[in-house]
Image 1 (cartoon, helix red, strand yellow):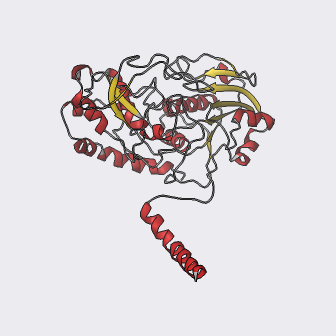
Image 2 (tube, rainbow, N blue to C red):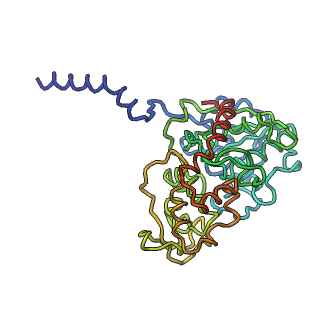
Image 3 (cartoon, rainbow, N blue to C red):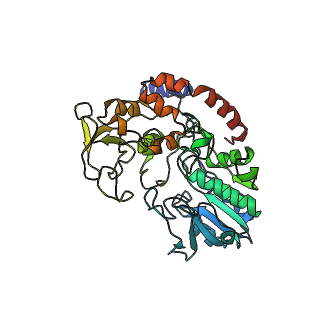
Length: 393
């Protein structure tokens, strides 16, 4: 009797499972996602007997945590130079910190920084390179500078006739397209292209878009090959193997990053100098009566001199907040409305991050979040149409 009931229950559950999964709107897979880096059968033949340059950092690893550089050396690939983005090859530098050229202590390979004055590889730095490999874990936000580094690498490769190989990786915010589009006058290293704050593309797809839209200098295009991920589509949950930069320590911070990073253009701290970066926010100018959470930033790994160093900040704790599926503005609006220093709240960096002056004007004028979102929709619709030409997944 017990056995019969158990079999009946299992049958009902299994028959109901597709319905339950459909209702939950969560995508499950029984097969693991294979990143472009793990898809090495596709790219090793392209590197054989070539002099190779690599743009990578600590995120350039295979599933077993072997670094791409070490893996290629074991495979007898002739690596000539490592090119490092913001935060350096090992990913230990603060945001905005100067990165110097040097040598990798483990392999002895030369490292050239692509952050600071040398954002674009120079002709002399490419003289010994036959092919360039690009492997960085992006997080899907316009102002995360790895896609800016990709632009300059593509431009250098196009100008010097060097093919570029992007080893693709999933975008942990890959199903979100939201925010104002960048206006040309606000172009900078934290926003180089007319895209929304959250673009919903993998870095391989993004490279195809840079090429296809002819965003490189003089409309140049580089010879680009994208080694795709396997068993992946953008609706899947994707947990990164290693933090992509010092102040994005976990999946929660990566999900909140685009929404909270706008605070970096204000008097509000995003938790740099704590252990919960981009999961909390606060300021000494916010009222403790209306914000019952507090923290005190102190120098630590990734923040040698954090905003409001040693000063108590009042704000909100979002470490357990539900997963976002849009760019969230309510915290920014609430902080502005309740700050004691409204005239000092925004600084010039805010318009670079927002990509437009309009968002600041809307918030200062008391425009509702709904109407602010409505003002993006025409541009977002046009972007989605353009973006569709370059999607792989």
